[in-house]
Image (cartoon, rainbow, N blue to C red; front, side, top):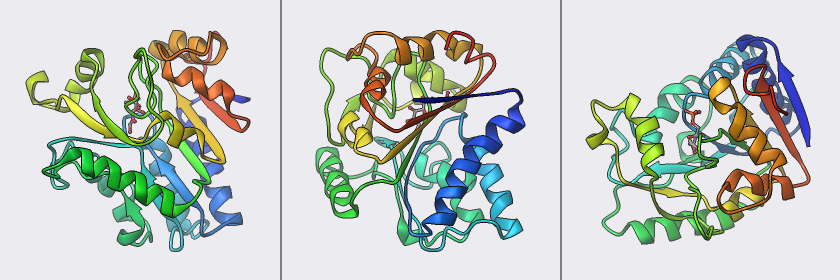
Amino acid sequence: MNIIKTTSEQQFNETGAGIIASLLQSNPRAILGLATGSTPVGVYEKLIELYREGSVSFKQASTYNLDEYIGLPANHPESYRWFMNEKLFNHVDILPENTHVPSGIEADPQKAAEDYARLLDEAGQIDLQLLGLGHNGHVGFNEPSDVLQGPPHIVKLDERTREANARFFNSIEEVPTHAITMGIGSILKAKQILLMAKGEDKADIIATALKGPITTKCPASFLQTHSNVVVVVDQAAGRWI
Ligand code: F6R
């Protein structure tokens, strides 16, 4: 596991974006697994900058997002599809048909999860999976539990996760209760994993995830079993690792 401790917000974002940009430069057809949340926002901004400078192109790349809230349509400002369009896709040369986010509005969410699983299987191996880290150790929306599922599936969101994400909604009541997420198996299949975490509030959980026991109670701990993980943290999140 390669741990990179950055010393500024700018370096944090540049390091994450640099890893993704180098992959696209060496393999323009790269398959990227992407995340939402606050952690990658600056990374996406930097990637947009690199695209505008002509240093990187997404024209042949394809993307698969980790997760989507059930019940939010693509035009809902808190849906993850909307987030990705706003924060990255609308500003680079990626072809919209090459971007994939699970659908949160199918009448049968179980089928939507299965459809996403099929899509991922057809796509082949993800070259790089970008991950943020939840305060409870979740990756994607794989919440701590007695058992973890491998393929994409429906998940009931932890109350802590809903509370953490309520900052983006008018009230906690508006935060969906369920989501579709790639499973831990889908995540671990990626060739390379880029885990990013910043801020003091992530210091304990990232240490637990990377140095504690491998347990379903901390889904991110399964990253210890992967042979190609790069961890990018700031000083605050990285204080115990
Ligand atoms: C987002 C996702 C989540 C977030 C995690 C951290 O697609 O799957 O696992 O990465 O909740 O969120 P932030 O970055 O907002 O701290």
